[in-house]
Amino acid sequence: MSQRIYSNTEIQEKISSALKKLSDADLDKFCRKSHSKVVFDIKNPLLLKVPTHFTEAEKVDAVKDEKGVERWTWDHEIERNGFLYAINTQWYARNDEYVQRWLNDVA
Image 1 (cartoon, helix red, strand yellow):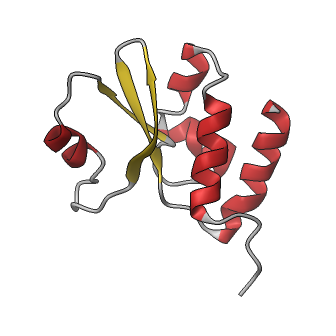
Image 2 (cartoon, helix red, strand yellow):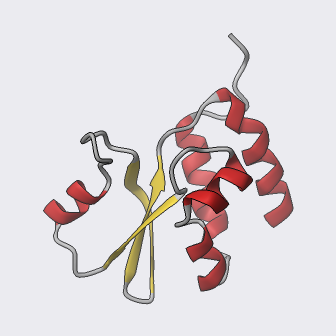
């Protein structure tokens, strides 16, 4: 098994921190599966966007995929303009290079 550059938690923390510096339009691009796949080689959108008025129960339900598996987390949520963004939790060794490249590009 190859050595990971980052843990999943480190990826979530580092990306969330960098995302806070992006414009609203750039942030919303990561709510799209296609953009997230190109940038990070992940299967689901990087971000899940819900209105800030969502209850805790609605937030818990929102992060689950169609099979009931939690694919996003609120641990590093971003709040902007009446919306909350949860970040993807599904990271593998093959994604590390993409993450590192993106972090270097946005730094």
